[in-house]
Image (cartoon, rainbow, N blue to C red):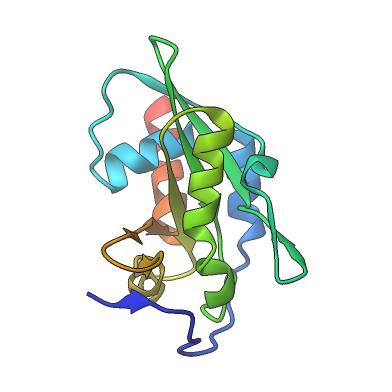
Length: 167
């Protein structure tokens, strides 16, 4: 298992724009429930709705810059309890500095919204998955964080599959 330590391994510019997928999720945040269940195999405890949250709940200031996840998604269950996901769509693999903050996004979201939280990365291509799923060391000892990740193509294919099933 590789561990992200802050050193930038390679610079790779995204050939596929990420903004359209963020717009897609803004229009239909419930798509993330399907991503978790159908693409990542998560068994959600009960029927769950995806709702758009406030990405400002992930915001922090570090190294003289403001940082935040691209989106925040609430996974609300029928009983009213929620789990939260910070969602990021890195445009390039040289985004290692930002990726080191991913554990912070999830932690801040959980603290500020009062529930468990994680992070989902939507990456440009399959060869970016390993980079996005790297375990980040959060300090000394065994404190680590591992995000979940899917590709843009997987999200678009799932969207098309769901649309076809609705017809």
